[in-house]
Length: 580
Image (cartoon, rainbow, N blue to C red):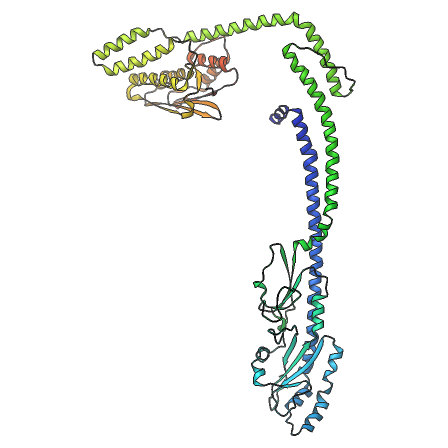
C-alpha cells in the first residue's frame, strides 16, 4: 500500500490527471459503450435466431402436414378391399372393365378437392386385363427400372421422393405398395399420389426467412430449396458440396422420425450480417450516443484539469526560482480554492525567506563547509589506517636477490607483495577499475596460497562487462583478506574462497563466499551493530574501513549484506552503482 502511495507521489500532476481521465472517464465510457453494443448485439442476435428458428419450425411443420395428408390418403387405399378386388379381377371385355371402374375407382378423385395439397392420384398394376387410362398405368419393364419402383418394392412403408430428380421438376410424390390383403392372383398394385407443386413452393418460398432453406433427404441431397444459385432441380446436389461464407450460421430441424421421413431434415442458412442487419441500421445512432457521452465529460475534465495544472505549474515555477535566490512573488490571485490558498501562503513564505536569508544563509554555508572538512578528514583517517608499513624498494631488492639464487617461487610471492605495497603507497588514486582490483586480489590470494599450500583454493568469476567499471580503491580486497585470515586459517579442513562479480541491471554485485569458521549469531549481530556506529572502530577494522569508505562515497545508494554460520562459512554481498 505504501509503495503504491509513494509511486503515485512521484508522478507529475499532469500525468496524474491524465491517469484520472483515462481510468475514470475514458475507459469506463468506452467499456460501457462496448458492453452496451455487445449486449444489444447479443440480444438482437438471440431474438433473430429465435425468430428464424420459429420460421424454420413452421416450414418443417407445414411440409410434414402436406406429406401426411397424402400418406393418409394412401393409407386409406391401402386398407380398402374394394381397390384390391378391382385390380385382382380378370376382365374379359372392355365394357366389363369400364363398369367395374365406375363402381370401384370413379370416385377416388374425390380426395383431390378435399386436400388442396394433392395434385393427382395414379395406380400402377401388372394386371394385363385392365385398361391403362383414367389414372391407371401398367407396371412395365421400363417402370421396373425406375428408382421409385425399386424403392417401393423394397419398402414396407410409404416412400416420399421426387420421381424424376434429374428432370427440371420439384414434384413430390408419395408411393405405397398395396399389399395389405393376400389375394389369389397376387397382382402387384402401387398407388402414387402427386403433391401439388404450388403447395410445396409456397411452403418454402412464401416465408419471411432472411436466408436460404434446404430440404435434405437421408443422404444429404437437396430435394427442395429456395436457393436460386444452385441447380437442384435437374441434378443431384449434396449440401456438403456447397461452399458458404465463414460467418454462415446453420439451423437444423429434423422431420418427424417416421419411416418415410427417416433421416430427412430441413436446414436453414443465414449469415451474421443478415441477422444483425437491424443493429447495423441503428449503428449510426449508437455511435452518436456514444460520442456524446464521451465528448461532454471529456470537455469538462479538460477544463477542470487545465485549471489545476496551470495554477500549480505557476506555483512550481516560482518555487524552482528560489534555488537561484529569486524570491519573486506570484501576482495576487483571488481564487478561493485550495490552490488559491497555496498561492497566498507561498507569497508569504517567499517574503519571509527573503527577509531571513541574509541572517541565516552565511551561517549555514560556514557550517556546511566545516562538516565537509570533517568528512574529508575522516576519509583520510580511514585510508591511513590501512596504509602498509613496508617499503616497496626493500621488497624489490629481496625479490631480485631471490631470482639470483633461483628461488622463483619466493620471488613470485615477493613480487605479489610488492604489487600490493605499490598500490597502498599511491593513495592519491582513489578510484580503480574492477580489472585492477582483481589483479591485486589475485596477488593477495597467491600469497595466501603460498602460505597455506593445498589447504586453500580460490575461484574468481567476473562478467566481461564488469571489468572496466570504476570502484573505490581496495573496495573488495579487505573482505578477501578477512575471509583468508579469520575464516580459512581457523579451520583444519581444506578451505575455499569464491569471488563473483556481476553486472546486473546497471549495478556491480560483488559476492564473496568462504567455507571457513564462520561466526555465531551473537558475533555477527555485534559486527552489524558496529558498522552502524561510526565513532568506534573496535574489532573487524578491515571490514569497517571499507564499509565507512563506501558509505562516504556512495551515501545510501549501496547495499551491504553479510551472513555467517559457525563451521559453515561466511557470505558477503555488496551492490554498487556501476560507473565507467
